[in-house]
Image (cartoon, rainbow, N blue to C red; front, side):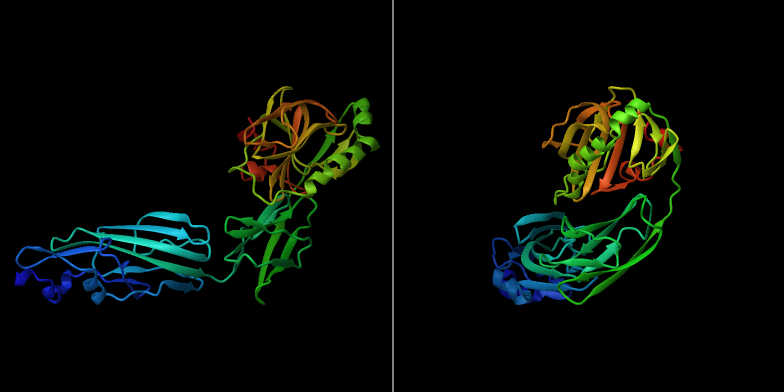
Amino acid sequence: MISSSEALSAYYAELMPSRLTLNQTPIGPTASIDQNKWSYLSHDNKWVALTDDAWHMSSANLTDIVNVQGEAIQLHLQSEKPFTLGMLCVTDTSDNQIIYEGTLNSEYLFLPEYDGTFRYHLQLIYTDNKTYKGDLTTELTIQIDRPIKVSLEKDQIEQGGYNTLLVQYASETDAFVAEQLPYDIQFFKDENNLKAILYADYRTQVGNYPFVIKASSDDRIFPLEFKVKSRKFHIQQLIIDETVAATTKNDTANAEFSQKYSPLRMQSSDADLTDGDYILPTKGRLSTEYGETRYVNGSPTFYRHSGLDIAAPRGTPVYATNSGKVLLAAPLILTGNTILIDHGQGFFSTYFHLDTLTAKEGTLVSKGDLIGEVGTTGFSTGPHLHFIISYYEHNLEPGYFLVGEPITYKNYKNFLK
């Protein structure tokens, strides 16, 4: 009886519950004997269970709220004894949503990618050693606060491309402004970060663009810079029937287009309505590249080609390039049967010259939904889809969204056939 007494636990120090530290600070288990079971094998070959008091005599408790600050923060867990299995559940206290649940694969605990207050529930199971066994459970609240970080996705883009500006670790009350850019930018929520788009359409001048981002929460200024590279645009000679040209490209047609289509691209949903990557709306032959300058029946035009012309037989299905809301599905004099989809946060896709319209105005469509068929309505020389992707009214190279590079006469067979 004496040899198995809990009073002799001091003689079994190496068999006592494992001491835990987080970032070199001691932590203890939740104060419940039912949840924290630890036994050791005494010298007379009997298992002795520890009381909860015995555990607290051997371990200190961490303050409930742990503040973690800095740019390269980490949560380093150390266990005096190697555990057999570790389980971790992390809950965002702002909405009680579980953001991580799984096993421990390293000595560093899961770290959320955004700042806030989180409840960590940790369970460590020890069964490998033959002289002790146990199950330690602890909970603690961790408050994470990193400094604001502002970065650009790319350091250079080509005319027709776009760049993403990302602001990480900002608070809900922080506001940001850009200075020294040739245009205003708008910030949208991107999961737990903020993002803004820097665009370069075919009219954007090439060169370096230094600018600064200012935060409202403090006096910090974030200097950034990106480069816009030139792109060679083709010149196209277009021959169109004079009657078609006269009836579809005139003052009335232009006024209708400006009234019914153009204003719709000035406002976009604050929410990202897309569903993953963009897909090709149809397949066929590339008949006009993005950004081309046109001569129509020998006369120069003042505009550039706003998207891709994909020639295909009349009736070829046309699909929504991504999920979004149909803002326009109607016949226009200039562009024929026309569909405009808002994908949210400033991005739109447009489909001109359709033979039929399947999509309905005001409805939500999913990526890949049938929205119409290839046709030759409006100002058109033959059956084709005029396809545009824009950031608000700024037309961009659709290839960057569809295949990650411009779609050109040289490479279109890799993508459109």
